[in-house]
Amino acid sequence: GYYQNGGLATLLHLTAYANTTTGNGGGIFQSAGSITIRSSIFQGNSGASGPAIFISGTPNNIDYNYYHDHASNPVVGAGLGANSVNSNLVPPGMIDPANGDYHLADTAAAIDLADPNSPVLYDFDLDPRPSNQGFDMGADELAGCYARVNGDIYGSIQLALQMADPGDQIDVA
Image (cartoon, rainbow, N blue to C red; front, side, top):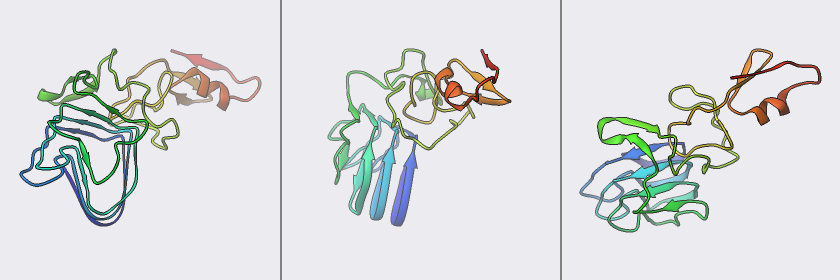
């Protein structure tokens, strides 16, 4: 898990899976400072209180996160976020997290649900974000259609069109 004891932390597009503590905050424990947590997946974390996130400092911005498979309220000390998903029935859709494969499956529930204004342009495999219709939650961006304009590669045709100048050639794969 992650521990914060002061300062300002911005955590975007994380995947926190099966972290365990006998204390609070299995995925993230914040004791002081200010924190932003967005567009992340928390699955199967455990702790005495706040199995996904425990906040005792100042929550700055917690939203667009996917919480799954937690025995109690996943977040203590702050709200889940109006655009977050909290489901013990539907997993976020990682391929095989128990064996270290945190990639999203083609049918993953966390696809296209992340913050539409995310500043993160690449996932942990260096696949461009966003791909398809929007940003995916977690560390992985499901690779979709790619478009190239003047040597720059984009994860969606729409973004390539917005970046192209009149007369530019757009290659799609």
